[in-house]
Amino acid sequence: MGSGAQTKRLLLLLLLRATRCGLAGGDQRSSVTNVIEVTNGGPWGDWAWPDMCPDGFFACGFSLKVEPPQGIPGDDTAVNGIRLHCARGNAERNKHVVESRSGRWGAWSEPQWCPSGGYLVAFSLRVEAPTPPGDNTAVNNVRFRCSDGAELEGPGLTWGEFGDWSDPCAKGVCGLQSKVERPRGLLDDTSLNDVRFFCCRS
Image (cartoon, rainbow, N blue to C red; front, top):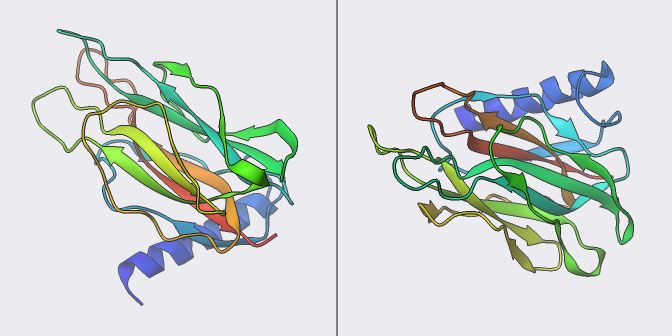
């Protein structure tokens, strides 16, 4: 088994243990089947706690916390956080919102929803590659693919490039875990660097 597969297996075991012990956000969730990731995330920060949709709910929409361009000599951080909006199809929208850790800068966008009650199933990150000693921003935007094939792009910034799409969830995304660099005072801040999502079967 490769190191990537071992990491995913360990994440699933830790997540299942956390949900059974009530440590993960959201309600108990024992139907996690997979972890989806991309390879172009930023190098800074630490992984936070996972936050999960309640049982029976899937992520049907998302919103981003985005800091606008700060100009010179400001310190840009671009995307600071991602929220998943969990629902059962078209019903009960905006009743359950999960986000893991988010950075302190920026404002939350309005939710974008998959059409026709679909679920988020895959994602791609727009990431600015490290340019030390420049003003690094890491994650600038995110795209999601819905279960009906529709694609949604967040209102993030334009630095960097979109990487490859993640593997898809068989049914839908049901939680997330973010990698965030904490504020560094007078040093360069990047905030959100990477994210992974959890897939559930029911």
